[in-house]
Length: 337
Ligand code: AQP
Image (cartoon, rainbow, N blue to C red; front, side, top):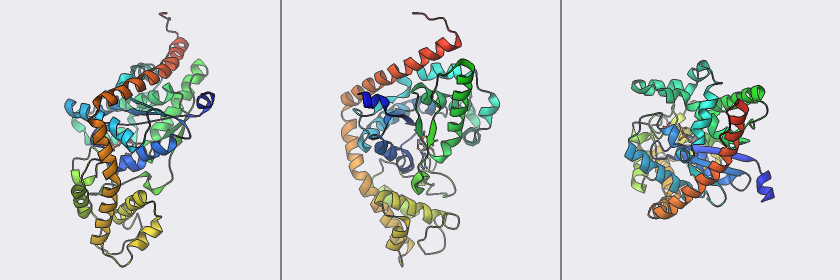
């Protein structure tokens, strides 16, 4: 127990904003599993973040439960890690309000994700979308996380987290741990769209052929890889600038087989793109089959999933409350106790 308390805290989350893709799995979830032995891990289903983009309420509810089951099916052990649904812990919104008062609009309007999502959802550029990074800062600072495993795309938000933690600490005295990003150097850190390899694979892409989800069946997976956009050459070679489509498929193959990129290239020397795409599809489908089966088994046991969510939110709320009480005291809120 004492050792556990001394272990560094690590926080990360995934939004239930659609069916989870192999990009989310390679870039985030499978690393969450590996990090469990080394750190005190806290993982959330980020539903508060998800509504910054319009969600169908029934789909959001379903995606939340499915993501919870997927986390466990992939190997996140609720006995080892704290696993919870973000909206079950009100402190996330409460800390966001306080941090909003030390954040400047210019810091948020220049965020790349805000600019990208505003362009993609021009009919719904809402305050939540702009404030998304401050909510993310709160997620991290509430748990005094020292490390945050994120993809390259989230690096800018991590910078803001550090800036706000330092700003608050300077103004009110030492309160927050200033976290470090934990970006995995593996080439699998960024999986690209199958329809447009210049863009990252995203679960909210309107084109379902752009991504492979963790719940796609074998036929669907193979069909999607068959359609993947490549080039007019015929050599399977890793060259991200010149051959982004083929390089992305090699990255995926490497991530699921554990073979190096050079070895992966050798596997397909002298073979055409058709054979290569089929092999990638098969490797992915075979790796996902047991996860999909376990997720389905868990989804049939709602009682168990509810008990995991309840225990997780209670642990998270306890930790979060400790930080929030400190923050409230520091900013001068009169204690109601
Ligand atoms: N294509 C990707 N390759 C590698 N990692 C990725 N991640 C997302 N896409 C890729 C990582 O997955 C984690 C969870 O992401 P998120 O759900 O919080 O939000 P996101 O990054 O915005 O993911 P999506 O799939 O693109 O969702 P939508 O379409 O809803 O915006 C993060 O650690 C992220 O780096």
